[in-house]
Figure 1 (cartoon, rainbow, N blue to C red):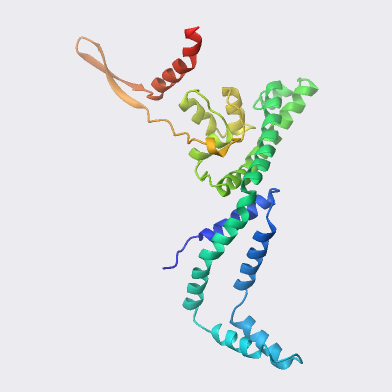
Figure 2 (cartoon, rainbow, N blue to C red):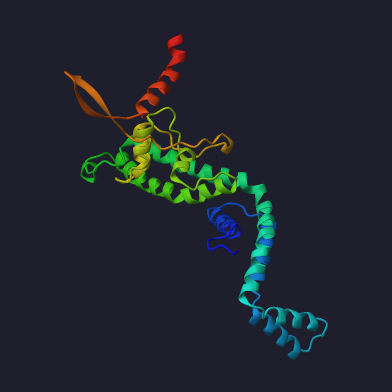
Length: 279
């Protein structure tokens, strides 16, 4: 049965194109197979009939005439047959293109990660000079250095946003699934042992001139593309806030909100401090 969404082959071709547009390398063998696949899709009934007509009208030899006639007749098959043939061919073509791209998958990710890290470093340096979300009115009397950092920070934040799709796609082509925001966070920054809810609040922050990036920097979270995809670990969303009844004396209770992530944060801090306390 034919599917309705993009096929694995279509997704692969689109993803490689995204990485290539960002400066990634595309192997010659991949290009060769992709071009032949594209050429195959261009053969429809009208094209094949036209080639047969050219062969009949032309002055060349007739050696190809029987083959062209057979192809033209086959091309007049129904749409269902054509779709099934294409579907049957997509599997082997997908495997061939995937194998052809595989040798550059890791190097392409590293190249795009390096570019992302360069932008992240520039933004972090600018944010250390002045908060990117400082109101414009306050920048009127600021130093030239601060005003430049303030202007640059917004540009660097925009560049980081623009670099994410290609970087995430390169990671996917290197066999890391980063389709959801939950999986992208640890790919693009290092939350360490900070409070999980505060980390996600910063990640989800959309206001201000530098959005999430300024919020992450203020929280002390390094912005960086993961160096070794083999060390990738998902970073789950925080558990929902819980409501509990607590005694307030004389048989009376009151409902309070409790953040279950507080307990995890206390444990993580204790784990970090243990070697220090041991000394």
